[in-house]
Image (cartoon, rainbow, N blue to C red):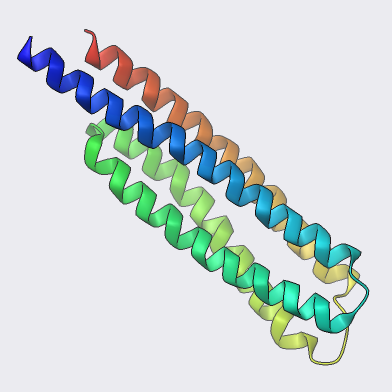
Length: 154
């Protein structure tokens, strides 16, 4: 019974972390998308630059948050689940970093101009990739939760 209680407590912690992580990941992506659409809709170049810098800052905190979440969750996972999550997260983190470097490039070249159509296409491409890999991370998190449930009540 003691062993089962330990496994249940561990599962409850993992369940909380996984569900919270899915919610946070989805919220972060939604905010990123909103900023992107604000950039597209804005005509004033100064406000566009401000939004672009805001997005760049947001991408940095999104990246750091994903790293922290991964490390924290891996502490509670068995090695197989931790490896699955690590692979899914690496793909997502690579795209987040790619967005950050592309945003930096665009921000440096803005000076006295508005965001160009090519800039928007570049940002859109990476945000689309982030969406795809976000789905992959969510899927892995759900698998992990299922695996942990099975391990808890075996």
